[in-house]
Image 1 (tube, helix red, strand yellow):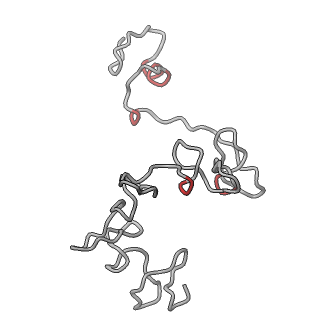
Image 2: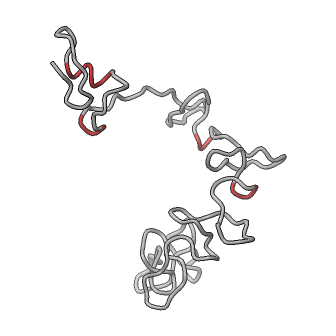
Image 3: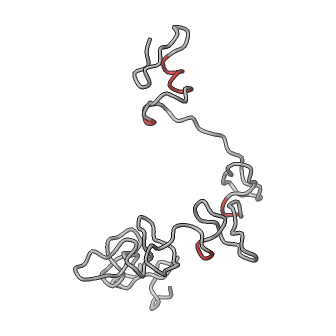
Length: 164
């Protein structure tokens, strides 16, 4: 028998499915076989139901991520560096002389046009919260009060006028 993905010749004692699950050379598309679930340990914090990964004993909420190497900085590292975004970690803006962090899916910072932009004609502002518009043009989260069209404040459901 021969594997249709990596052309390996199989002995009759080994099943094709076993080969595709265990062989590192097999080029089977990942969506074809069920993914094996890895058992992860619970967080060491009492009453926390989150799981941890690797050798760390706490979940990300309770400090289970790697921290910046700068003295007295407790921020989470970015990318494959030992620093947070404030201290040079992660992707940087490609504009000459700019040291700001690049936005997701872009090579530039917000100031130099990085990140998602508002879809309104002529607007150069950044799009908000999963929408394709800036706050001025109706993007982002809106106040939950009936008839209010103002944008909601961070982590609240209301605008400044209604107590957000």
